[in-house]
Each structure stands twice: as C-alpha cells, then as structure tokens.
Length: 458
Picture 1 (cartoon, rainbow, N blue to C red):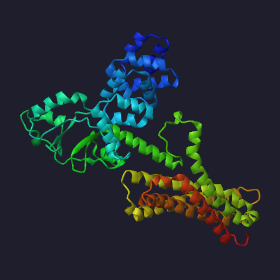
Picture 2: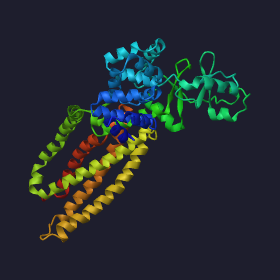
Picture 3: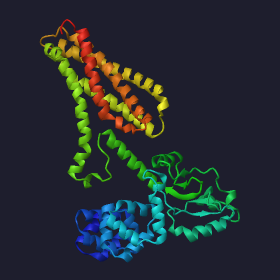
C-alpha cells in the first residue's frame, strides 16, 4: 500500500490517493511521509496531508519522525496546527516540544491552549529519565461510591479523548489513588454495584521521579497495559501506557548494544546520521582501545628474544587471543542481560563467578584437548620433518587455553558486576574492553608457560 500511494502521488491521481489512505493504518501513512521526506518532496507531502480527513491527519502526525513533523509544521497554517495539537495525547505533545528547534517550539506554544501550556511546563520539569517525563494525563477516573452503570456513563462521556479506557482508576476527593478496575470487570459486574466493591486496592504504581527503565521492567513483569503514576503525596497525576514502555525498552536496548560495541549513543537513526557523526561516535572508543592494546604490543616486544628463538610460538597467538575474546564476550553478554532483567544482582557475585569458572574449565578443557591433538598431528605425525618440541609446545598452548578461558570468563562476569556496583552502565564493560584485557593476560600466561616448559630451547 505504501508503494501504491507513492506511485499514485507521482501520477497525481489524488482521488485514488485519498481512497487508498483511508484503507491504511496511520503508522503506514506516516511511512509514506517519511519516503516523501527522503525524496525531498515537501509540496507533495503537504498535499497528501491536506487530502486526509483531519482526524486521520492528526493521528498520522503523532507517528511521524521528528524531522518530518517539523517540515509539516512549517508548511501548514496556524488553524491546521491548532487542530493537530488539540488532538494529540499529552505524552506525544511533550515529546514534540522536546524534539523541535526553538523557533518551531515558539510557534507550537503560541498555538497551544493555556491549559496545555501549563501542563507542558509541568511535564518538562521532570528529569529526562523519569516516569514523569513519559506519562500522560489522558486517563479515565471516578470516585469509589459511583455505581457500575454510572462508571460506564463517565467512560462514554470522557473516554473519547483518553489514550486508554480499558483500565480505569478510582481516586479520592484529594485525588489520591485508591484502586483500579478494568472494563472487563465492570462489564461482568452488577450494574447497580458500587465500584469500590469490585476494584482492586493493591495497585502497582510508580512515582513521578522513578527511573523510566525500571518502569518498563514493571510492564514486562506484571503484563500491564498501563501504569498509574503518583506524586510524593500519593496523588494520581498521570499514567504510562504500554506503547511508551516499549519505546523505553527499545531505547535502553539500543544504548546497551551501542555501548557493548564501543559506540557513543545517538538519538538519530543510522540512515539519517551523517558520516562525520557516525565516525565521531566510534572514534573515541577506538582510540581508547587502540592505546590500551599497546600493552599487548609491549608484552610481545618484551618476549622478542623467545619469539626469535622459536618463531613457531607466534602462530598460536591469534588463536589464543581470539578464543579469550570470544569467551569473555559470551560471559559478559549473559551477565549484562541477566542484570538488565534483574535476574542477577551484585550480591550474587560469588555464585556467578563460581558458575562461570566451572563453565570455563569445561570449555577450556575441551578446547585444550582438541588443540593438543591438532598440534601433535600437524607438527609430528603429518609433518615432513617432525618437531622434537611438538609435545611440549602442545602442552604450553593447551595449558594457556585453559588459563585464558578461565581469565576471560572471570573478567566477563566480574567487570560488568563491578560497573553496576559503581553505579555505571554494565554495558561499558562489554566485549571491546574485556577483549583488550584478556589479550594482555593471554600473552603473559602464554610466554610465562613457554619460558617454564621450554626453558632449554628459549
């Protein structure tokens, strides 16, 4: 349908365009506007926007990317803008204000109602990572003494402007949260029953200053569609809906992936970021890791005499370093994911480390046996000239593998847990950092064992 609409717009068949968009979801229509923005066709985008019914246009606007929204705002009239703003949910409204440049914000506020301006100012005062910053005030509420029949009358009267009507909240005269009831429970109840006889008083809720990532975990843990938010006096001030929780989860996962890959976080999507920005986000970590890798180079230089005497040792270094890095990445990924899901706490350190050590011994033992056999066959049985030091070299490599895997697994669980203990993001201690440290350790262990076992040759 997206491709069809784009073709119809190109052919200027606007009647067919209008008919097609009426059959589409607002999310897909927003994708059409994104394509037109990429094609740099602002006039076509404006024509499409005005072809749609006002309600559909306003709904589509809330799903557009910020740069597309800005181009629409700059093209439409004040009357059209006021209609869009009046139709937006407050959380989307606040996001729009935060993402627009100052000159656009000035126009948005000028076309906002006094009530909305007041609410926006209140929402913008909450910290960026707090529950208050992502909540909305569009929810259904009533007092505990209303009947089920009266509750449905309230829902019918006010629900059209609410972001969700499935979960309704019961508040006191002081707006303190007293209970929660779902539409399903209301439908199945006696129409004359009082709401307080069917509501749940054990309400899972959040406070305005709670971390929004912790809020997202509550949605996952309790399978909720919405979560009430209260202030420090326990008064209901808003709700957070599942769509906003999903956005928070996606943003948090993206940040973790970027940190684990050694990339600075950016709010822009990949295709919209200029090459210079992409390079800038990566170069800092690359420089840090490059200079830290100089430690490995210094170690190789220190053992230069041993390498010159027995050059064959060099051929095993890449395998040892790669194995250590891979094992560290496996461990850190599991630990970071476990901590993100609250399955692992810093207090579980000894249990986690003991489990990883046992895994390391099993993995390292298997790898060492395979390599011992491989080296013996390659440099003794199948070699044209058997190497007299083959067995000892195989022993050095095998023992180093076991030690390297144990070190890598230990670092993979210790460093992320240490980071969390220090109130840092555990993802900082992911693959790049662990690989660099493990490389240095594997070189040190390898040549220490080589100098001990092959003393007469080195």
